[in-house]
Amino acid sequence: MIITKTPFRMSFFGGGTDMEAYFRENGGAVLSATFDKYCYVQVRQLPKFFEYSSELIYSRTERVKSVEDIEHPLIRNAMQMLGMSDLRVTYDADLPARSGLGTSSSFAVGMLSAFYALKGQYVDKQKLADDAIYLERVLCREAGGWQDQIAAAFGGLNRIDFGEHGYTVHPLIISRERRQQLNDRLLMYFTGFTRLSSEVQKDNAASSTANRNAILREMHQLVDEAQSALTNVSGSLDEFGRLLDYTWRLKRQTGSRISTNSIDEMYARGVQAGALGGKLLGAGSGGFLIFYVQPEKREAVRQAMSDLLEIPFSFEENGSQVLYYRS
Image (cartoon, rainbow, N blue to C red; front, side, top):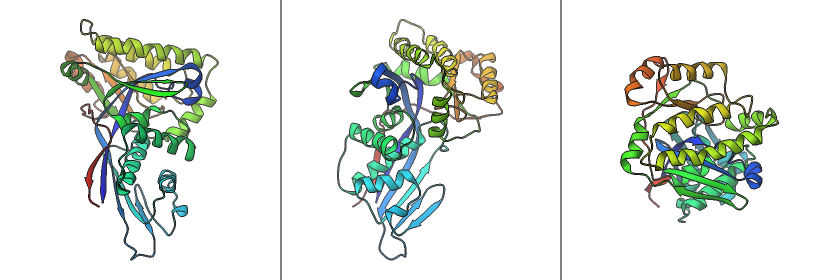
């Protein structure tokens, strides 16, 4: 039996520039972090005592006689990709799927890690990320970028650069105290809405404006400014919050389903209560909002957002891990 634990991520800057069709020509960069909310994948060989050969337990239960009969595209394609069969696969998570935290990619990374472990093979973080990108974007043909798979595999607070030849991961070197200050100034709320990221990505691409690439280039440049706000110890961390507000206002212009009237109202409430900035996490239309809030304004923002569920969190640094291994 194998159990893996894979973190979810929050993307602060550069989202959209990690789309392959964009970054191969224009380059891209993302600043993101993983945090202590996880998905768990349990995999074991299924004894041959049943009428079915594999059992798959996620938001529903599938029992199938062949891998080809599996309806869940990630599980089916992953098992075919690695030649797996006769399995019981169970998925569980701390937060809901389709919520802008890269949950699908975390599942893909954690499942592939478990499959490799079951085969007795060690794979490094880059191999896990590369395989998860191939699984989601090529085999499953799901629209989206590359940042989620990379963040889930590597973990930590990173700048990820994208270009003609792929990607590179650069951990941000900041003190533990400054990292904690950033953590303490971020509040996260569930909007109550979930959606399928790949569908939102397709709709946003179809409705994109003529100046979308110009907006993405500016969002790419903001990654440099945000990185400087974090790493420049002589500067104020509050600049990070102001930049979050600016990048969110830019991102809202890149597609029709980035935001909704309800989300705009929620965001306005947080800012009016004292948040310096924030953004919706993920492709858009739902999921989680984060706000950057100075310590003296935290209670006012919490009061303003009291109708929403607040999600306490702490940054994590490990990425996907095998929690339990028994051959």
